[in-house]
Image 1 (cartoon, rainbow, N blue to C red):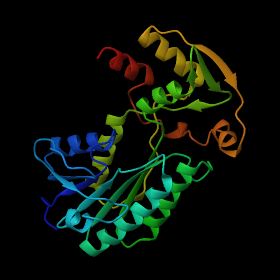
Image 2 (cartoon, one colour):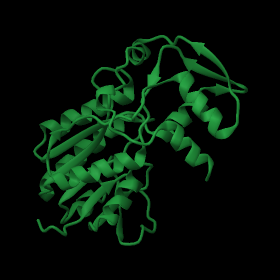
Image 3 (cartoon, helix red, strand yellow):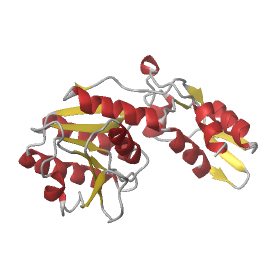
Length: 258
């Protein structure tokens, strides 16, 4: 396909996908953004409507596409991710797509959480498919860490899973890495990408308190189950690949400044 053939970004309106779209545009690539609902795309971006679960509109979305960056995901309905990936791969093979780039998560092969299992199943589909591929696993995005703590807060108390650490990574940096991989061509499973620091839950809370001025009363709890045991074992971390630059403290401070 020609160098100016479009790059299709699935989940192009999401936290990561929107940044991938912006980075592709910044680098002068032709971009097509797939979402389930109609709407105006960013300047210079073609917005197409399609549903990866049903397959509606996917063949049209892939017409003439050179590369797909697959960011679409439904964490609350992980089984749909597997269905969506299967349909996308079938359509991409039929369309002659030359490269599929997939974003995954560090620890999906070791943490038996339902969403992680689905991400690993998608990896396996891609690895076994006939579309040349690249898979990047990363650690937890900065906004997700803040959201997770909010979800674990009841009234004035934030419950922290004992013995658990995180390695938050910047979403913009992940987006830039994905676009690097688009430009590199099919590379298989590439090195993981982690944030610059491994932080305990207490250190995460301290960064948020400093940035927001809001004090949190915290209680440590030892959560049961194999998934939390795997988190305590550190399978969600990749300290040997701490290639991110922006720290969690810097990210939350910037967010608090507006």
